[in-house]
Image (cartoon, rainbow, N blue to C red; front, side, top):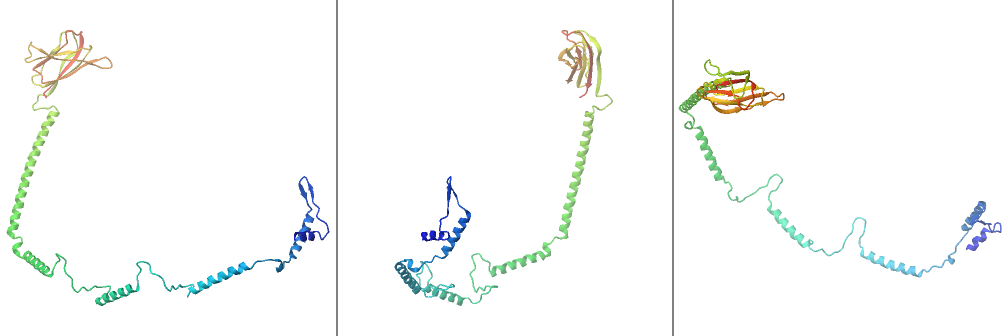
Length: 323
């Protein structure tokens, strides 16, 4: 067949197309390619194949077709009715536990018996002809007895003997009057207590403000030395009488950083005994100060510069207090 096509390609000009090869490249004219394609289309359209030229073995095909027809005939014999809406199964073995026609007939019989025993049944009521009460259930006899007891209670409440009498009310009034009297007595006692508290408060105010009974002041200041020059071993001023006072506040200043001795006497005579000392404190400017509080003081006190100290200029006050 290929030789016929090549002959047809060359039938127009009786010559082959010229193809030139240069440096492994083909150069073909486009007009020649178009002419050859037209000839090829015309030739392909004129190709005819006769049945005699095709050799086909039909024996195998006929055997397969016969077998297929036999199988389809068997299927057709087994399908009695078939449509797109239903499939009818003529027989089938039931699975294990499936319901049978005998069980259905027995169930129908039992249902019919039940139907015969139900006399009235609707959605609004259930009629119970008889029923045994559970253990401890209320009976009509017990309800009647309860009603009787309730009536008796009502009668008791309505009987005048059970109501409060005028005498009873008078007794209650007397008890209320007694309670009122007790309350009044309690208020009187509270007033007395309040008065005592107020009096004690006045006394406390007297103590806080340092004012006692009488015209004698409860606190005064005794100036012992006013910038006096005191030599070592000498007394600072005179003794201070403390017989009417309970405490003394000693304060002052000195030019020397040294202590003062405190001497006491019961009678203010020549016999004094040493009790304790007052030590000075200095500030940032180098000034030295005395300050000491003495409680439960003896009859008289006096201050003395120790013999081991240097002479100093001293200013000293003793504040006497009766507390």
